[in-house]
Image (tube, rainbow, N blue to C red; front, top):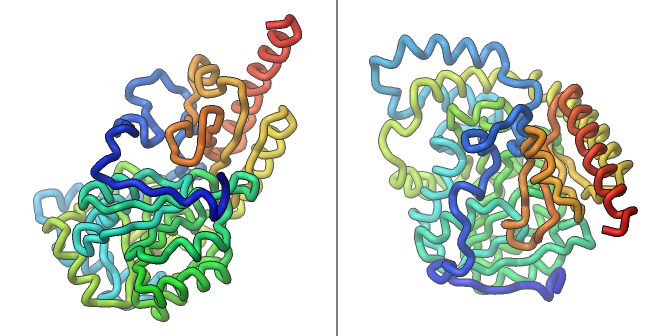
Length: 373
């Protein structure tokens, strides 16, 4: 079933039949594989900005002190960068900590999650035993959000929505997002809008400039991907409902933002030029990678982010792993199946190397098939 006909239900407490270990729900398992190129994690191919590296080095001198429990410097820097009041910002040890704090604070009884999407939303729902309504996005429509989702919100009290989506990379335009938020506001549905990959696409479709119109909206972002610092762990939420911020904040531990994360975040907030440069670079390399894979006969879905969702019957994950290259096998994403893979957009040299190796693999299977196997 596709689109609006594919809404299905599940209780978080009864998900044992769909066993996904924490070791395989994320990319980047470089610790149990011999990897020379990691295309499984979607971090900035330009690497860590020099100013951010320097901030981490200087933060060593602050290790003998507790972090600022209010993250005042970080709030001021980020608030200035996105034109938001300090008291409408909440910081977490990565976006994942914020997601967990949100559900613990608000205790949604029924949650809607369009799929395929980031597994972390389902993971946090289990912690509060929410009933989940999975809305299956249509592969024939490039996994874009459709009208059916608007009608699937009856009886829900929370929606997790990603823009651009992960693992598809598809960006939803602001016009649709506004309609979605209007429907949710009318129906009493709180919305967690994950914009962690938005900086790679430009900000034209972000809701940061309009969040004040929707007291039911919580926008979550992270420094992890755009600044290539997943090891630092830093994300934030912005919301115009200050009481809701206080409630969510009460679910976070004291000093959850380390001195390293605070200093790095302050430096990141001043790197607007780096973000714009990244979006331009990723846009060019995404076209190179997409066109190259299509030329090899692989189905590539339209993406606006720093990664591509592809489909092939060739066991690409295993074959690339033999060659020391790691990609994300997406068969354990709800709404996908065996043969779907996610590939990060990296730098020009690495992207060309990946295309060469994929070409070798495609030729191998073409010859194998020609011999009647």
